[in-house]
Length: 115
Image (cartoon, rainbow, N blue to C red):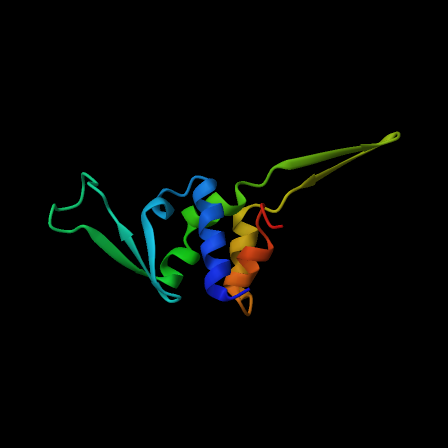
């Protein structure tokens, strides 16, 4: 799977997770995306779109929160023992994505919905 295909899937997952910008996003290339604003009230009427560089949204906190959410406790019961753990939330995954060799692949491989 190409980076472009993985990126489109990751953006869809973030949009499904509540990332609003992804609803109006169009690709102009792997390193640049355009968001069409469709009547956003805070935007001058002659400005119908905003251009983003890939890193401007890929490493964005709202984008990461939509992909991975907040850390949540996990409780497992096995016989007499109970163990507590926390899922790794958006901050952990954002750090890992920043230092990964291929952030797009990291996001694709580490988000819910992966086949």
